Length: 423
Image (cartoon, rainbow, N blue to C red; front, side, top):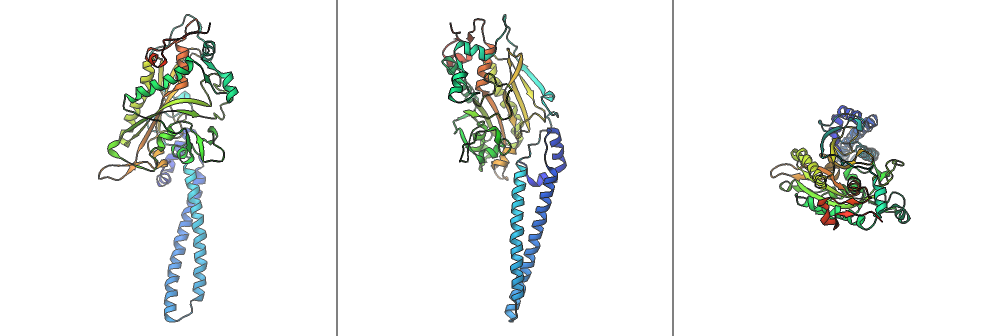
């Protein structure tokens, strides 16, 4: 969220930001609300001055033994007007707060301007695609053929777009999460195991609410939701707190299940594991000083890349344009892994700097010694999405006989070097 005073004073810059992002924002509605609010506040101040003057006159008349009944009646009328104007000003304040919650973050100056993914900029690639002497198959065919993935039984348990992992498939899913967490812990991240259910305040703080309510699962009759990403929990660990500046940057990581309704995604990438209602993910998160945050973002991207490099998976890093970034982000890099069956890259991690956007919404500050408190910057990134890494391994490491070779770094976690095809 943005500071209201700054937003008001730099409205032209925000109009340009909305154009660059390709979003519609009701700036005229804001101007109207803001103007009425200021008029109401001015009216309240004028009426209070009248009341104070009348109070002085009433006191003088009573002291002089004069009749003050007319002034008392007038003061009662003024007090009622003050109450009505004050209530309207409070309602306008609430409307302005609600409006500000819908305004996305401002892109960093280094972010390319564009309205869709065609304007994204490839930054680098690592490795090369695997070569096959046969036509590579999609992961769902390989996995179902090896008996390690069962979508039909998952549908019996829940609905479509859920997965049931079996045997070595389940072990590899679990092993990947442990491998990710161990790797990140070795590079300074503190592991967190948070609740998988979050409240409205936590979701509002990170920018998921009110904008993305339709994309989440709400628990009926409660203030609770299934988490869409542990970015929510990790941000909210320090909601409404002031951190010791000497502790920054704070680096944490968490494994959770994530739940998304994927509203509006019908018919898009719905076969296999790519777009599920439930998936597991390891999240990387940092709380930093403002002057550190962009350097820390680069190192966060490198931390996510390190996992793919250890697994030997070909990938590229892409800088997202203004129109393709998330609502809360000032700058985002996507890491995309190679999928042989589709002959294309697939997003496996988004690494974002939200600057003070989430911290302001969540009330997270830091206080340098001898200085004034200010908002921290927050950074987040997948390190990595477990299911998407699972499917990338199955596709990139598939063999002609339907078996799958386990990457060497993952073998201690899976307990084997190969997932055999079913006879």
